Image 1 (cartoon, rainbow, N blue to C red):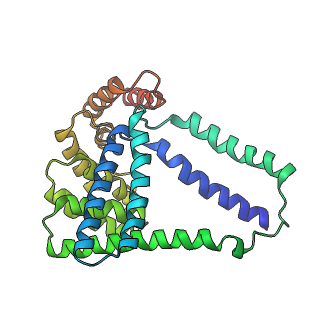
Image 2 (cartoon, rainbow, N blue to C red; image 1 turned 30 degrees about the vertical axis):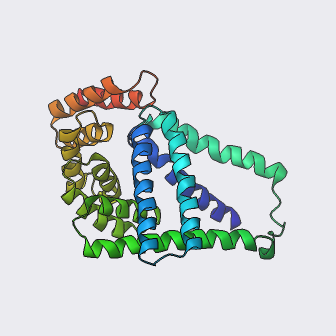
Image 3 (cartoon, rainbow, N blue to C red; image 1 turned 60 degrees about the horizontal axis):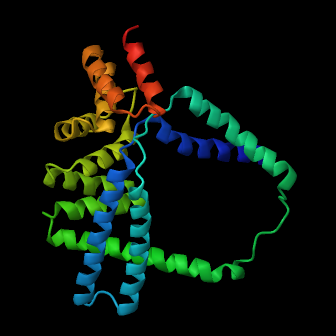
Length: 277
C-alpha cells in the first residue's frame, strides 16, 4: 500500500515538473525586471502604510527585509539572462520521467530509513514561527493592497501587482479577477497579459485553447511581435483551426528567434513538419 502512495506522489511531482516543458516561457530577464518593479511598488506601499499608522516600525522593517531579499534574488536572475525556453519535446520529458524516479529509488534503497522518527517540533519551533510571521506579514500587505484598490480601482499597476501576489499565494480565482482588471486598464502591458493567460490555460478543454487565452496572446503579438509565448500559442490556435498557413508563419518566426542551442527548437521544428503532413 505504501508503494502505491509513493508512486502517486512521484506522478504528481512529475506532472508539476514537466509542465514547463510543454510551452515556451518568456526570457528570464524581462520577468526579473517586472519582479523588481513589483517589489519597488511594495516598498512604496509600506511607506504609505506607516504614514497611515497601519504598520508598526517592527512590522515595516520585517516586511522591507523580506522584500529586499526577494529583490536581490530577482536582480541576480536578471544579471545573467537565459535564452527563452519552450517545449523540449517528448524525448526530454520521457527521459526525466524515467530517470528521476530511478535516481530517487537508487538513493532511497541504500540510504532511506522509513522508521526513523521525524525531528521534534520543538526543535523547529523558532523557524516555523519566523516563517509564519513572514507569511502573515505578506498576507496582510496583500489584503491592504486589495482594500486600497477598492478606493482606487483605476490603478492598473496595482491590479497587476495584486494578481501576481494572489497567484503566488495560490489564490488563483482571485488572481484571475485582479488580472482581468489589470489588462483592461493597462492597454500596452505585455507581462500582465502573458501571466493572466497562463492562469487561464487551466481552463482548456477538448483540445482547444480557451477563447480568452487566444485573445490575450493576440493582443500581446500586436504589442510585441517577437513575444515567444504569443507566437507559439496563437500559432497553436491556428493549427487547431486547420489554418496551416498562419500557424506556419508564426512558428517559423518563433524558430528564427530561438537561440541555436535552445531545446525548444526541436519541438517547434517538429510542429512545423507536422503541418506539412
